Image 1 (tube, rainbow, N blue to C red):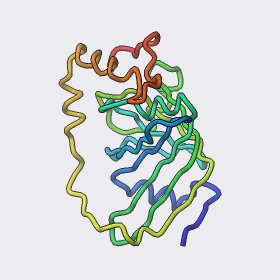
Image 2: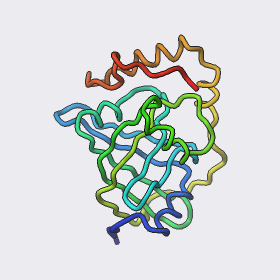
Image 3: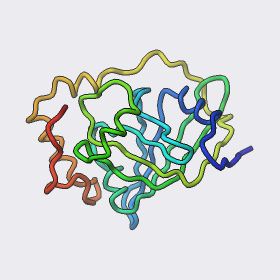
Length: 189
């Protein structure tokens, strides 16, 4: 039976910390495509307080989440247990993008583990509703390991390669503005 929670208590924080991945869902205000993205790396998600979470947004294939957050701020995070104890946890809220050159970013980065070469931003979410579901139909999976491919790819990428990523991340696939061309990201750390 689904249950709602008033805040991210210790039990929910423990559940979140045990999950190897999470999913991010956003949608534009008018028409367009709904975005649903799996996210990995255990050290890229953090519970900041009872109603605030954040994750590191790494360069990938597109910038849908950033574009949708700029458009309307709506975001849902989903954690799904693939272990013998079934559970799905959804965090519904309003998100905002904090770029590496924003004053707030250094304080946020202290909540995350290892440095990742492809950090595009941090996404901070004010959690407005928390609900779980049974997950009884979700199959069992065993985690073998984290996939190091994205970190390895970004670590060896040249500045020219990152410039091309920035160009591809200017707009969403629906043409909504994502990364601001008049406000380029600072050099990689």
